[in-house]
Length: 131
Image (cartoon, rainbow, N blue to C red; front, side):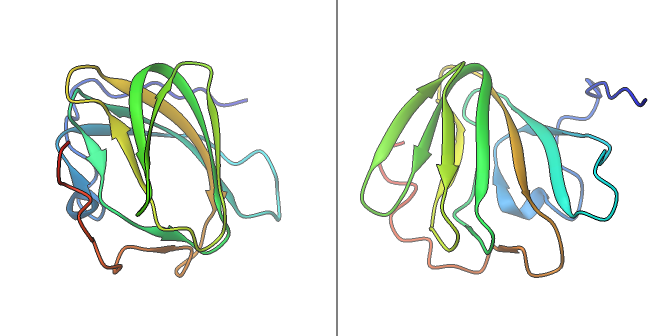
């Protein structure tokens, strides 16, 4: 059995991920309890205004909003989410997600891991407009 506690002193995503976020967020990685499988399970704690930049998951992504309020965006819409909501992002679907400008948000994510599992080199479009 392993326990994970968010590091409250770490205000920025780890170095290799910092360029993929806007604002402040902390990652809380969980141990993989499924030997031989490759899902990544972790929590992201976004401070108010913190969010990911647009990206695509080759194998999709499942988000469970654990606390606070956030926004999930695609090229054609933005949706307000709150604690208890579950979002299924389909494989290859362009999106971004994070806290609202005035509220922090935490989500737990389940996604496939591997070198090509997330593509951050996507057209950003107008994702930052009106946020």
